Image 1 (tube, rainbow, N blue to C red):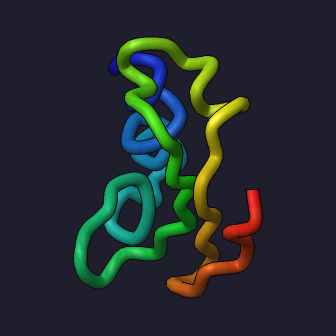
Image 2 (tube, rainbow, N blue to C red):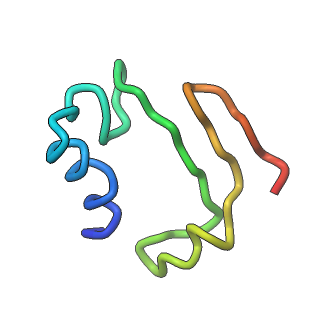
Length: 64
C-alpha cells in the first residue's frame, strides 16, 4: 500500500498538485490502469495482468 501511495497521492502532494491529481475523486484528473488481481498481494500484477488503460476519462486500451 505504501508503494502505491508513494506513486499517487504522496507524489501529488510533494509536487503541490494534490487538489487536481493523486487520488480518484470527482473533479480530479485521473489516468487509470485497471488490473486483474490485487496489487496489494503482489506488485507484479501491475506489469503482468493489465486489463484496461484509461486516459482523460476514456478507455485507450482494453485489448490485453
